[in-house]
Length: 263
View 1 (cartoon, rainbow, N blue to C red):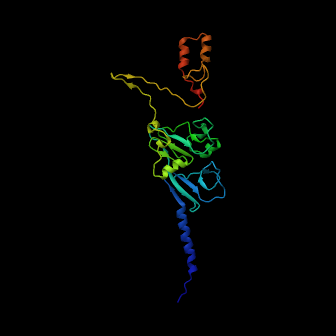
View 2 (view 1 turned 30 degrees about the horizontal axis):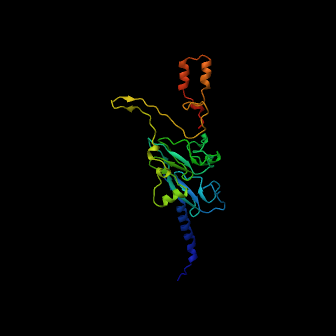
View 3 (view 1 turned 90 degrees about the horizontal axis):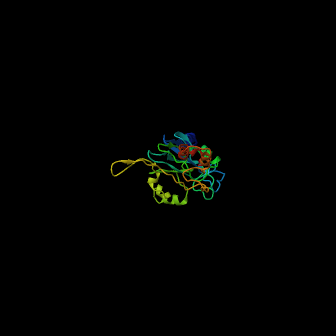
Protein backbone atom coordinates (compact mmCIF):
# COMPACT_ATOMS: atom_id res chain seq x y z
CA UNK A 1 0.00 0.00 0.00
CA UNK A 2 1.22 3.51 -0.89
CA UNK A 3 0.07 6.60 0.99
CA UNK A 4 -1.29 9.42 -1.24
CA UNK A 5 0.47 12.73 -0.62
CA UNK A 6 -1.56 15.60 -2.14
CA UNK A 7 1.24 18.11 -1.68
CA UNK A 8 3.26 16.25 -4.31
CA UNK A 9 0.80 17.59 -6.93
CA UNK A 10 1.18 21.22 -5.91
CA UNK A 11 4.14 21.96 -8.23
CA UNK A 12 2.22 20.55 -11.19
CA UNK A 13 -0.93 22.47 -10.31
CA UNK A 14 1.10 25.68 -9.88
CA UNK A 15 2.76 25.14 -13.25
CA UNK A 16 -0.62 24.64 -14.97
CA UNK A 17 -2.04 27.77 -13.33
CA UNK A 18 1.03 29.78 -14.29
CA UNK A 19 0.75 28.59 -17.89
CA UNK A 20 -2.97 29.42 -17.93
CA UNK A 21 -2.27 32.92 -16.56
CA UNK A 22 0.48 33.42 -19.13
CA UNK A 23 -1.80 32.44 -22.01
CA UNK A 24 -4.52 34.82 -20.78
CA UNK A 25 -1.96 37.63 -20.59
CA UNK A 26 -0.80 37.30 -24.22
CA UNK A 27 -2.89 39.52 -26.50
CA UNK A 28 -2.96 39.22 -30.27
CA UNK A 29 -3.46 42.56 -32.03
CA UNK A 30 -4.38 42.35 -35.72
CA UNK A 31 -2.36 44.04 -38.50
CA UNK A 32 -4.75 47.01 -38.73
CA UNK A 33 -5.79 47.15 -35.08
CA UNK A 34 -4.66 48.85 -31.89
CA UNK A 35 -5.13 47.59 -28.36
CA UNK A 36 -6.66 50.01 -25.88
CA UNK A 37 -5.29 49.11 -22.45
CA UNK A 38 -7.35 49.71 -19.31
CA UNK A 39 -5.65 49.36 -15.94
CA UNK A 40 -7.98 47.98 -13.29
CA UNK A 41 -5.83 48.74 -10.24
CA UNK A 42 -3.78 51.80 -9.39
CA UNK A 43 -2.87 54.01 -6.43
CA UNK A 44 -2.92 57.30 -8.31
CA UNK A 45 -6.06 59.09 -9.37
CA UNK A 46 -6.79 60.79 -12.67
CA UNK A 47 -7.53 64.49 -12.76
CA UNK A 48 -11.20 65.33 -13.11
CA UNK A 49 -10.93 66.61 -16.69
CA UNK A 50 -8.57 63.92 -18.00
CA UNK A 51 -9.90 60.49 -19.04
CA UNK A 52 -6.49 59.04 -19.94
CA UNK A 53 -3.67 57.87 -17.68
CA UNK A 54 -0.18 59.09 -18.59
CA UNK A 55 1.50 58.01 -15.32
CA UNK A 56 0.15 54.47 -14.84
CA UNK A 57 -2.98 55.55 -12.99
CA UNK A 58 -6.02 53.27 -13.15
CA UNK A 59 -8.14 53.77 -16.25
CA UNK A 60 -7.48 54.13 -19.97
CA UNK A 61 -3.74 54.06 -20.67
CA UNK A 62 -2.06 56.49 -23.05
CA UNK A 63 0.14 53.83 -24.66
CA UNK A 64 -1.58 51.62 -27.23
CA UNK A 65 -0.70 48.04 -28.09
CA UNK A 66 0.41 47.87 -31.70
CA UNK A 67 -0.05 44.89 -34.08
CA UNK A 68 1.51 41.58 -33.02
CA UNK A 69 1.58 39.41 -29.89
CA UNK A 70 1.70 41.62 -26.79
CA UNK A 71 1.94 40.81 -23.08
CA UNK A 72 -0.27 42.51 -20.52
CA UNK A 73 -0.83 40.80 -17.16
CA UNK A 74 -4.35 39.47 -16.86
CA UNK A 75 -6.45 40.68 -13.88
CA UNK A 76 -4.42 43.91 -13.76
CA UNK A 77 -5.11 45.02 -17.35
CA UNK A 78 -7.90 44.54 -19.86
CA UNK A 79 -7.40 45.10 -23.59
CA UNK A 80 -10.01 46.16 -26.14
CA UNK A 81 -9.27 46.12 -29.86
CA UNK A 82 -10.09 49.03 -32.16
CA UNK A 83 -9.49 49.38 -35.91
CA UNK A 84 -7.04 51.85 -37.38
CA UNK A 85 -8.68 54.99 -38.72
CA UNK A 86 -9.22 54.65 -42.46
CA UNK A 87 -10.53 57.47 -44.67
CA UNK A 88 -11.95 56.14 -47.96
CA UNK A 89 -11.34 57.78 -51.32
CA UNK A 90 -13.56 60.80 -51.92
CA UNK A 91 -14.06 61.45 -48.18
CA UNK A 92 -12.40 63.41 -45.39
CA UNK A 93 -11.95 62.59 -41.71
CA UNK A 94 -12.98 65.17 -39.11
CA UNK A 95 -11.01 64.83 -35.86
CA UNK A 96 -12.51 65.64 -32.44
CA UNK A 97 -10.14 65.67 -29.46
CA UNK A 98 -11.52 64.43 -26.14
CA UNK A 99 -8.35 65.38 -24.26
CA UNK A 100 -6.34 68.56 -23.92
CA UNK A 101 -6.95 72.09 -22.80
CA UNK A 102 -10.42 73.67 -23.06
CA UNK A 103 -11.21 75.85 -26.06
CA UNK A 104 -10.99 79.61 -25.51
CA UNK A 105 -14.32 81.41 -25.18
CA UNK A 106 -15.78 82.08 -28.61
CA UNK A 107 -13.59 79.58 -30.47
CA UNK A 108 -15.32 76.97 -32.62
CA UNK A 109 -12.26 74.85 -33.37
CA UNK A 110 -8.93 74.05 -31.75
CA UNK A 111 -5.62 75.64 -32.65
CA UNK A 112 -3.31 73.41 -34.71
CA UNK A 113 0.46 73.09 -34.41
CA UNK A 114 2.80 71.21 -36.71
CA UNK A 115 3.85 68.99 -33.79
CA UNK A 116 0.38 67.38 -33.84
CA UNK A 117 0.99 65.95 -37.35
CA UNK A 118 -1.80 63.40 -37.99
CA UNK A 119 -2.75 63.00 -34.29
CA UNK A 120 -0.98 59.66 -33.78
CA UNK A 121 1.28 61.09 -31.03
CA UNK A 122 -1.03 61.55 -28.05
CA UNK A 123 1.68 62.64 -25.61
CA UNK A 124 2.98 65.20 -28.11
CA UNK A 125 -0.53 66.57 -28.55
CA UNK A 126 -1.03 67.06 -24.81
CA UNK A 127 2.48 68.43 -24.10
CA UNK A 128 2.16 70.97 -26.91
CA UNK A 129 -1.07 72.44 -25.52
CA UNK A 130 -3.51 70.66 -27.80
CA UNK A 131 -7.11 71.68 -27.24
CA UNK A 132 -10.32 69.71 -26.92
CA UNK A 133 -12.97 69.86 -29.61
CA UNK A 134 -13.00 69.91 -33.40
CA UNK A 135 -9.53 70.09 -34.92
CA UNK A 136 -8.95 72.43 -37.88
CA UNK A 137 -7.12 70.12 -40.29
CA UNK A 138 -8.98 67.11 -41.66
CA UNK A 139 -7.54 63.73 -42.55
CA UNK A 140 -7.31 63.45 -46.35
CA UNK A 141 -8.63 60.57 -48.49
CA UNK A 142 -6.56 57.41 -48.24
CA UNK A 143 -5.42 58.02 -44.65
CA UNK A 144 -4.71 54.86 -42.63
CA UNK A 145 -3.36 55.64 -39.15
CA UNK A 146 -3.42 54.22 -35.59
CA UNK A 147 -5.12 56.92 -33.51
CA UNK A 148 -5.92 56.62 -29.80
CA UNK A 149 -9.64 55.69 -29.69
CA UNK A 150 -10.38 57.55 -26.44
CA UNK A 151 -8.23 60.63 -27.01
CA UNK A 152 -9.74 61.29 -30.45
CA UNK A 153 -12.92 60.60 -32.35
CA UNK A 154 -12.66 60.57 -36.13
CA UNK A 155 -15.72 60.96 -38.33
CA UNK A 156 -15.95 59.85 -41.93
CA UNK A 157 -19.04 59.69 -44.11
CA UNK A 158 -19.89 56.12 -43.13
CA UNK A 159 -17.99 55.49 -39.90
CA UNK A 160 -17.16 57.06 -36.55
CA UNK A 161 -13.91 55.78 -35.03
CA UNK A 162 -13.19 55.89 -31.32
CA UNK A 163 -14.86 55.51 -27.95
CA UNK A 164 -17.01 58.54 -26.97
CA UNK A 165 -16.72 59.64 -23.36
CA UNK A 166 -19.60 62.11 -23.46
CA UNK A 167 -22.46 60.73 -21.28
CA UNK A 168 -24.97 61.64 -24.00
CA UNK A 169 -23.07 59.81 -26.73
CA UNK A 170 -22.34 56.82 -24.50
CA UNK A 171 -26.03 56.66 -23.60
CA UNK A 172 -27.01 56.40 -27.24
CA UNK A 173 -24.44 53.66 -27.78
CA UNK A 174 -25.80 51.67 -24.81
CA UNK A 175 -29.27 51.81 -26.31
CA UNK A 176 -27.95 49.98 -29.33
CA UNK A 177 -27.83 53.03 -31.58
CA UNK A 178 -24.67 53.18 -33.67
CA UNK A 179 -22.77 56.45 -33.38
CA UNK A 180 -22.89 58.15 -36.78
CA UNK A 181 -22.14 61.59 -38.18
CA UNK A 182 -25.80 62.50 -37.63
CA UNK A 183 -25.16 62.22 -33.89
CA UNK A 184 -22.85 65.23 -34.20
CA UNK A 185 -25.31 67.30 -36.22
CA UNK A 186 -23.64 66.71 -39.58
CA UNK A 187 -25.01 65.28 -42.80
CA UNK A 188 -22.95 62.45 -44.37
CA UNK A 189 -22.50 64.40 -47.60
CA UNK A 190 -20.68 67.14 -45.66
CA UNK A 191 -17.79 64.71 -45.21
CA UNK A 192 -17.36 64.14 -48.92
CA UNK A 193 -14.41 65.68 -50.73
CA UNK A 194 -15.40 69.06 -52.19
CA UNK A 195 -14.96 69.08 -55.96
CA UNK A 196 -14.83 72.25 -58.04
CA UNK A 197 -15.54 71.14 -61.62
CA UNK A 198 -17.15 72.54 -64.77
CA UNK A 199 -20.96 72.68 -64.84
CA UNK A 200 -22.80 71.36 -67.91
CA UNK A 201 -25.39 73.71 -69.43
CA UNK A 202 -28.67 72.75 -71.07
CA UNK A 203 -27.16 73.31 -74.54
CA UNK A 204 -24.43 70.73 -73.91
CA UNK A 205 -21.67 73.26 -73.33
CA UNK A 206 -19.86 73.64 -70.01
CA UNK A 207 -19.18 76.62 -67.79
CA UNK A 208 -15.96 76.97 -65.84
CA UNK A 209 -16.55 77.00 -62.09
CA UNK A 210 -14.67 78.54 -59.19
CA UNK A 211 -15.01 77.87 -55.47
CA UNK A 212 -15.54 80.71 -53.00
CA UNK A 213 -14.65 79.88 -49.40
CA UNK A 214 -16.37 81.58 -46.47
CA UNK A 215 -14.90 81.17 -43.00
CA UNK A 216 -17.02 81.48 -39.87
CA UNK A 217 -14.13 81.72 -37.45
CA UNK A 218 -11.32 84.20 -36.92
CA UNK A 219 -10.81 87.89 -36.33
CA UNK A 220 -13.25 90.26 -38.09
CA UNK A 221 -12.09 92.19 -41.13
CA UNK A 222 -10.65 95.61 -40.48
CA UNK A 223 -12.33 98.65 -41.95
CA UNK A 224 -11.52 98.94 -45.65
CA UNK A 225 -10.42 95.32 -46.06
CA UNK A 226 -11.64 93.32 -49.03
CA UNK A 227 -12.97 89.91 -48.14
CA UNK A 228 -11.27 88.22 -51.08
CA UNK A 229 -7.81 89.40 -49.97
CA UNK A 230 -5.79 88.83 -46.84
CA UNK A 231 -4.93 92.19 -45.40
CA UNK A 232 -5.89 95.63 -46.69
CA UNK A 233 -5.12 97.26 -50.07
CA UNK A 234 -2.16 99.34 -48.90
CA UNK A 235 0.16 97.41 -51.23
CA UNK A 236 -2.04 98.35 -54.18
CA UNK A 237 -2.09 102.00 -53.11
CA UNK A 238 1.71 102.00 -52.91
CA UNK A 239 1.97 100.49 -56.40
CA UNK A 240 -0.34 103.17 -57.82
CA UNK A 241 1.84 105.90 -56.27
CA UNK A 242 4.88 104.41 -57.98
CA UNK A 243 3.11 104.38 -61.36
CA UNK A 244 2.61 100.63 -61.72
CA UNK A 245 0.74 99.46 -64.81
CA UNK A 246 -2.82 98.16 -64.62
CA UNK A 247 -1.67 94.66 -65.62
CA UNK A 248 0.81 94.57 -62.73
CA UNK A 249 -1.86 95.72 -60.26
CA UNK A 250 -4.37 93.14 -61.53
CA UNK A 251 -1.76 90.40 -61.21
CA UNK A 252 -1.20 91.31 -57.56
CA UNK A 253 -4.95 91.51 -56.90
CA UNK A 254 -5.50 88.03 -58.30
CA UNK A 255 -2.41 86.55 -56.71
CA UNK A 256 -2.37 84.24 -53.71
CA UNK A 257 -1.52 85.52 -50.23
CA UNK A 258 -2.03 82.18 -48.50
CA UNK A 259 1.43 82.41 -46.91
CA UNK A 260 0.01 85.21 -44.72
CA UNK A 261 -3.02 83.23 -43.59
CA UNK A 262 -3.13 82.50 -39.87
CA UNK A 263 -4.77 79.06 -39.47
